[in-house]
Image 1 (cartoon, rainbow, N blue to C red):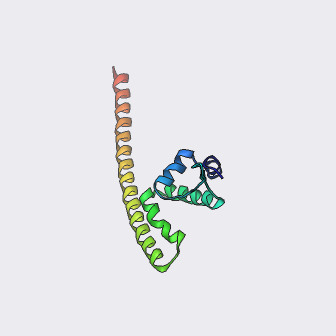
Image 2: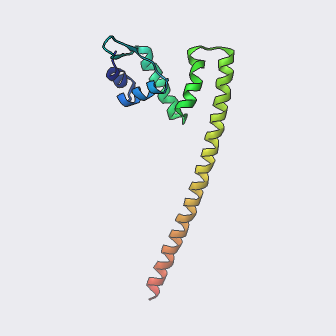
Image 3: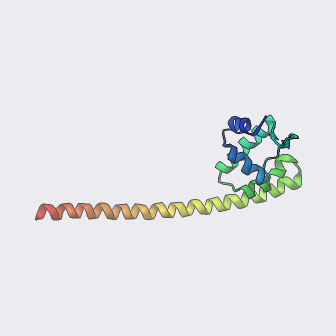
Length: 126
């Protein structure tokens, strides 16, 4: 299949497929005229890559994990586990940062509500 069909089947843009190829996450074969050709396995790979992106992984992290998928071995699995633990730690810290940001926003919202209530009592007293 050509790039447009792969993109359509996988639910991504043609630009995304080209990016994945640039990042060495997906490989195509080329016709004599230079057109990219893909297989059903490439559709599944792009869908898998999309799930990894949705989990918050970067393209470099995904690239580091793919040997475990492409050539499963004890060594590749161990390396993938180490990398996934690092990513989990990074995501946990990011979540903690987001929680702190949300708590700060909650505080600002409470202050704004108190101020609006105070303004309402000042207006009524005048």
